[in-house]
Amino acid sequence: MNGGHDLGGRQGFGSVNAEPESEEPLFHAEWERRIFALTLATGMLGQWNIDESRHARERQHPADYLKHSYYENWLVGLEKLLAEKDLVARIEQDAQCFRVPDAAAARQILRTGGPTRLPDLTQPRFRSGDRVRVARCQRAGHTRAPTYVQGAGGTVVDHYGTHIYPDQNAAGQRAGEHLYCVRFEGTELWGSESSSQSVYVDLWEPYLEEIS
Amino acid sequence: MSHDHDHTDPPSDLELRVKALESLLLEKGLVKQDALNAIIETYEHQVGPKNGAHVVAKAWSDLSFKQALLADATATVADLGYVGRQGEHLTVVENTSDIHNLVVCTLCSCYPWTLLGLPPVWYKSAPYRARAVSEPRAVLSEFGTVLPEHTDIRVWDSTSEMRYLVLPERPAGTGGWRESQLQALVTRNSMIGVELLRHREEVK
Image (cartoon, rainbow over all chains, first blue to last red):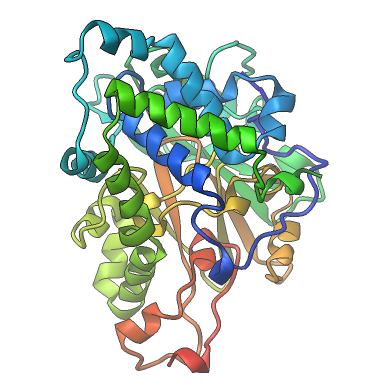
């Protein structure tokens, strides 16, 4: 879905207005610190994956997504996942139904992370140097093919092997697809004034079509 | 403009919503207080841009480390102990006199946590996410970074679980500096690619 989150190339947002690096706090309010920790801790229950949590934040009216601050969107996403997965009712019925991490377990999970590389079960369709075009995609579900590259032609510069495919993972189905890094010339994406700049985008095989 | 929302001055109902949610989750046993504290402590005190600065200073000081880093960043920084969430798969891209790299996540906020910690507000903001890919020179100039017209600007949009770190150019005038001295020169912003590093006499 190309909701409010799909921002690449959009206009009208004004300047970046970065806080100086040396002056910026890690969190700007106590509630941000709390929702950050709550989101990670509940994620450790293993009841949803990272693509489901991204999709939960994206599934908002675009005006709401853009109006909210960053951590407000995290709060919206977490409230949605807790309700959809019915976690409160489930633990009320069975207090032992989740393995709830303590401090040591939480630290271990942060150190382990969530690698997405899977064994290669198929041959990659593309290799470095191949010319490809990003297919148009107007499905309702989660995708990591940004709108600004859809329909554009680029060149494969790297093959990262088989990785968990977000479009299916967000629907709770874990499957692997080959992942490539594709280079797009600025002129292809933005017009003739955008020379000497290019964009590199990681794209899964189902997003790509061969340019013959 | 949207930047009014970048620095959140929350309405009290937002604070209350988070407080209510935390109370509920603690009361039901879905989270544990000591786990919440451990998560916060990890990102406030352990994982941060000093990790990335260590990697960069080492790459400047040790050619074989730099070659290994550019060939397989994930394994190379794991040897230094930098492993974990949002750093499971890493690629390091090198700035040179002709090539300048810049990292963004247009779809959300993907960022190499194991090397840089949590992303700054501006990295997650709509203006940066929208414009870094389409007008990188204008964005860079807002950080005071003006590059020659012929510089090849490469923007890395973090759409997969691959995380990107920029290896900035070593500042001139730092020959003979020790790794620890070099490390103090490396800013977080230079490893995202929004600024160039200069030789700052005061950190020597």
